Length: 132
Image (cartoon, rainbow, N blue to C red; front, side):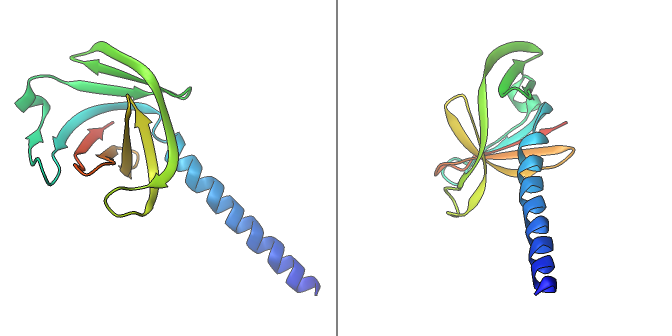
């Protein structure tokens, strides 16, 4: 009985630590400065836009206090709130990390130390790629 109880406690601790760690990575690592690399349109509107093709640079900063600051050619053009939460993706009806800002919601498709890819959580599914 004692071994069963200890096994239960150990199992509970590992599953709790994993859940906390997964949510921390998703919301904590987005806080940084991101430079726009490319946007790719969805199925109904296939296009590719880059700073060179569109004629301007774009940079966004996610702050730790829930703000996103957007720069166009190094001039601040927007400062608004953002929110990261779990939710259902439009394209696959699966659970994902979602980020909402400026009245739109995106699926966080890729987030690591150097890359951020967000996809519009709607039928268009346009993809935007940022680098640190």
